[in-house]
Image (cartoon, rainbow, N blue to C red; front, side, top):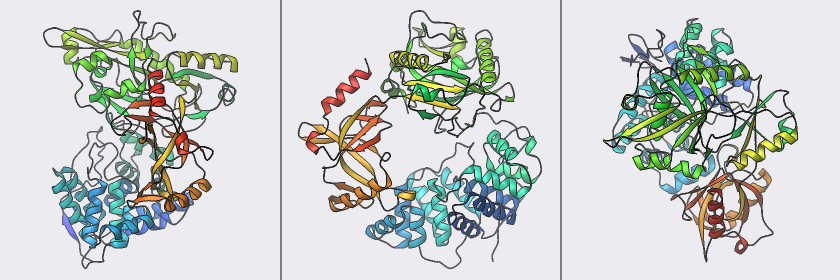
Length: 617
């Protein structure tokens, strides 16, 4: 076996003396061990038992050098780079498809047939790519190649590097290189299982590993610390998003009061869930998908920068309609707070790198804060909600009085900090204000009181209620019964299926993703896509029907005869140029098949307009 000696990337991370560099050291010696990782992944995919999966991972990690194991831990978590990094490969699925086709010497039809069998481009690569002499790479070298691809400018340069990488791999290695690049291993291995495997491999507790990984946002660095017995040295790295705590739905007020004795009740806002990191006068906002969204809301950093301590907050960004009488920040009563506007209004602010003065003025936002995860050097997730609520109240109240030592430019212009961030434009000193509001909380001791709060929340234009256990810790990424959400659908539409796609995972080989439309006079215009709501039996039955009634076979997608009617529910409706109808449904889901209705009986664009206009009143 040949070995390749290269100098490593020795970038530091500045986290209180703990290096998160997954391949630090003077020199790395690469062996062709990517194949060992791929073989381990095959074994992991072959079992459904979690203990067996963690055992395979632990065994593999112990068999590698620490440098190799650290990189492998990142890859086994389904990532090309550690979670805290903002680095992305920026290589599209279509580009990967073309590279695989070129290296395999296959035409589009052959690749499409393979994709239908597997439902996964990595598996396609393993099937169609040829074995080559002198192929095979080390995991650390694959990591370096990923760095090169991420740093390359332009699609052509990236494609050339991807081609070179895949040309040097075995088919089995290529399978998992492609899977890592697309961020979807599909071997039934969550990061939490990798954490458990690290604990098992290095004789530490899973809780220690989980905590260090949460603080660092780097499972490779966490593995290094575990191997060296230094997990306690991990410190919070600001500006890497943590997981968000999730809520489970309840159908009624009675169910909402059935899981715990002490409950805190809040309005459920229809905005953007956002985690705010505040440190040293710098502020960054992250969405639930852990994407940074600060640029879309430039007025919020000014409003948050005056906090008395470094902190990580959890809350909801909403388009806001301000009442004349604005309350104090710490006030929790639902009076004179203003009100949230529909999500369709906020949508105009999303994804913009530059927000115009006019948009800032016409679509002001508020950040409704309801939880705190970290403050003043202390990690708070393990504290009960009742304690976190007190800490949050105290921090926000102090933020009104204390100007942060590092004022932002707009603060220096206006001379103000605190609950309202202000942006000043040009010589006219036109002021745009952003509001940081402690989300109002309530108590409900009976179903009748809960129902009253629910009706009042909807009257304020909000989706419904959040019901939270006051004794619960903050558990990121878990959808248990500590947080509950009670809401009712905005409306339903009867729609016609116009196209279908093959599913993924357990739905490989069945047509489970449905594109649907409504009538605009005498033609159907698409308005959305849904893949949840039908049973496996219904999907199997509909797959057979769609295969027999295909108008155009596009490989993984089929245009079908417009005869099947579905009833779909949704939370909100937005203007959108993505669909021909000019509208899009937020969180659409299939309620049921409507075999009792013909396509002619489906809803019209006029009905869509009525629903949209009704929600914006």
